Image (cartoon, rainbow, N blue to C red; front, side, top):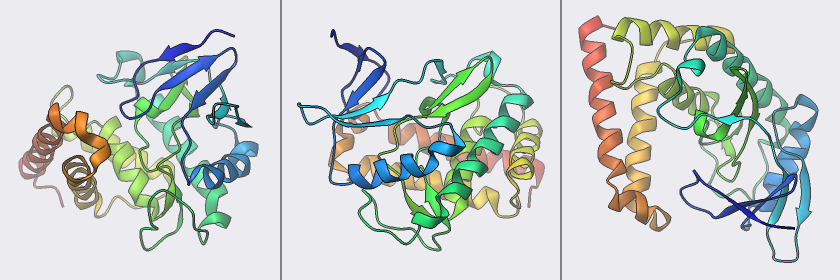
Length: 238
């Protein structure tokens, strides 16, 4: 069957073949496949179909709209944010039994509570009619505290960037996400800033991110960190 190159990914070449997606594998792929099979009863994840003769993993194609930045207006409502938070909680809760396992691409981040996706942004989520219906690109999954995914999802969805909204509206949405997930928002500001700092370090130090370095994505995240700090100062947020 013909292969259709799927755009949007920054690190791997991903193709669609019929109702499947083919992606490069790594030493962590067996563990990721185990995770996807464990999460399958919850939904929101592609079905695992093994590895093809070219050595690529074969996953089911999840139809819908991927939330590439800038986030479309249709995905900026509270209903989408609430559904997103509930989806993340269900996926996290279903992953707990794999927390003590090894073989992930990245080492566990303590205190490891769940298996986090690791890059749980709208550009890795498939939407249909404004509702999140699937999560893709699980290569970065690894045991970590819940906030590691929550903080990055909130950063992307509030969003903590100058594109739209006000500091007050962003923090209202951030607190709504935490309430729907079922976690405290205390300390969220520091967690968001740590996630942004981690993104900067990764882009600057990981050889796989050479394109992102050339395109100065690190400066993008640094500017957003400053925007978060300015918003906190304006609100005297604690």
